Image 1 (cartoon, helix red, strand yellow):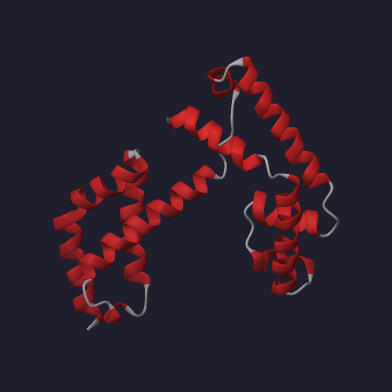
Image 2 (cartoon, rainbow, N blue to C red):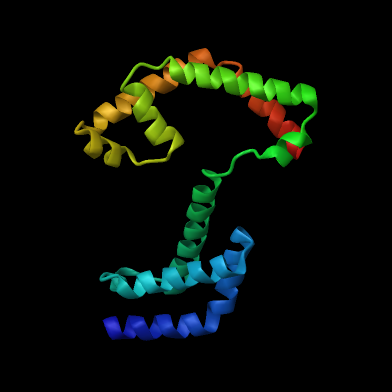
Length: 175
């Protein structure tokens, strides 16, 4: 049965490779990354032990490609920051507003008590997984969740105006 799945996957791969690469490219806008995602998805299916549970292999691959692309985009967006050219897009007044709000955000972050502050920075800003933080700090995952929730609550109180700023910036950037 496993050999049949491998043969089916090989046939589908050869028949639909370009189509799947175009699908991936429509998300990533990079040919090499698009091909890499398609190849990774198919390789993972080959390595997977439970391939006989897949009812519709082609649909499964298409969904896996979309999900992989979305994960890759999300991961890339965590590292996107404003550079000098982006700041020049805004007028001097808008830049001052951004700087003021950023300063308020940093002040609110500094007011968080430890360990809420360090847990918040690791999970919300640096993107570490709750379980990884819990394990590295020798605390339970529920304790990590408590500190994250507490930090967000305190930050929300301090930063009520930040949502208005974000709406303003988004309107100017994409409006």
